Length: 508
Ligand code: ME8
Image (cartoon, rainbow, N blue to C red; front, side, top):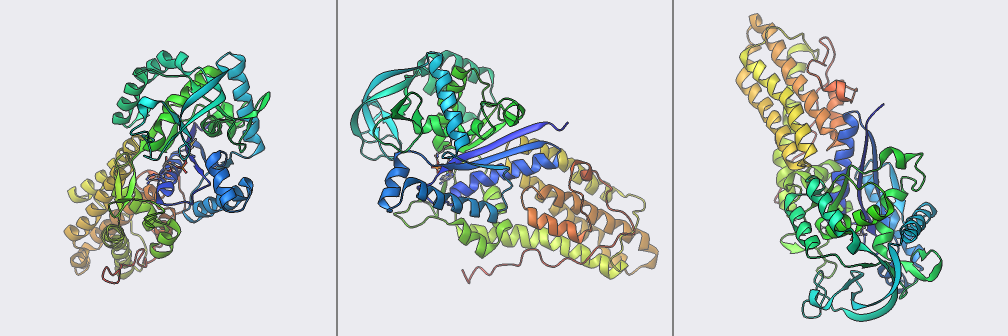
């Protein structure tokens, strides 16, 4: 039986259209999912859309639509983008689906039956765009501390979740499980927050309609975060333990942006504790993308639209750039210039050139037929060992979600390949008939190393990997294929076209 692995992205709000920030998280989850599948895991990769709440309701009425019409329209844009970005999600959850509503109702009821949800009254400062209540001391000049927009004082009857009851249990859990919240700096932030004391949390609203009714009192709808977070289990069929829920829960990793860390590491685990359910193993909050030094926003009209990027540069260049440019966990800045630079130097020069050069040489010297490797020299041995060592490095870096470091490690082997060609100088060997076997050995090492490189790249750049492996005549993509020595002498290898044409910077 294959071991199970469950990875999620946030479910994105349908009152906004997808941009590179959304693409970033989804892409990271995709790379992880693809890598784990390559390594023999039974992966469940979930993404979806968050369709309830006041923001969606307002946006819909402003656009002259019903909330569901708006959701139907915008969720399709997310789905179309994920297809275009080669995202390999196993499911797509919408919070307006019956399966979700049923699960949220069930969870709410269970926590209520336990006595951890009670009816009370709320009076506090409310930020409508963030759908968050704040105490007066948390406000900055009476503005929302998260988004700096004005707040209003609201009083409403509300159901409360006894979050305060779980403060010590949560703290103990965070302290006993260092990998639960990552990166470390974020973990410290949350520990400090929890230590300040948890208040009971308002988990229902009466000020708008667009949501899941509170069981037994449909004057109230369930608070968006209680509704949204529960997607991670309703998509697995919760409360039915028999199927996917029993198989994949608790989640291996929730990938999120740093903006929604508190919801995932304070609210969500305490809801689960109250319901007597296991806590996700890990929550990783990545950093924030800005664009040419500025915050992305509709009003600045600088939102980077992934569809446009893909049309212009190709899907794999975009996938590569986003994960290579910035260490996962740190903030990053997007610029076309940086993207073009990566395409030209890493993809066209290093990666593409190596395949192009080596397959062309095999064509020229051996009519494209792979030779059996002869005696291994020190140079060959170093190159082989470097390639084989890459497998462990990649395993470790991916485990740490260090995507940029993973790619860096892969590129060190690609550079080693280009250096190996320079040092072995096949064009010189080719002039001496006595060196024919040596030349065949060099060709074998060059191409075999690249076969392993392309297999590893299949998680990051699926189309490019397929092409690269296609030239090498290789089709098997699994853990066993990663062992050195896969290419069979006597097999035919085609001359590779340029995988990534260079882009003229001036034209941009
Ligand atoms: O928060 N840089 O949805 P959302 C990096 N529905 N990542 C970014 C980004 C940026 N500039 N902008 C957005 C919600 N993201 C809730 C989530 S989950 C149960 C409910 C990414 O549409 C990042 O992953 O506002 C962030 O956490 C998410 O989009 C927020 O998406």
